[in-house]
Amino acid sequence: MTPTKETLHDAVINCLRNVYDPEIPVNIYDLGLIYGIDISDDFKVHITMTLTAPDCPEAENMVWQARDFVSHIEGVTDVDIEITFDPPWDFERIPDNIKLELGFM
Image (cartoon, rainbow, N blue to C red):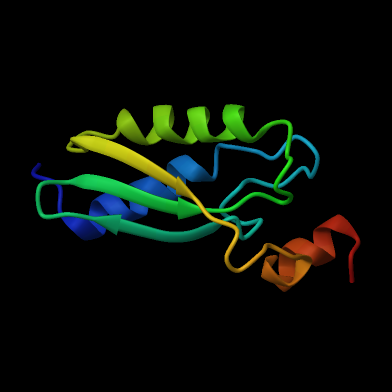
């Protein structure tokens, strides 16, 4: 089956939901750390993400895991991850159902 941008986008999200911030027991997608997922016509994936803090000690590990997981999706030709702090991450980026699970509401 030939992948489409839509099927790859869904697969990327599923992969990112397997990468966890070790300080908060939530995956990086549901934590709101992913600001954008762009897939080019030749199936190169560009992910724009942030961190919970600029000096996050696990940043390198989370980026490596995300790149590794996404690169193994059938059809993906390349993975680029851009880290940004604009806008800075805050707890408001976490969906209400996850906040409830974590006891933040």
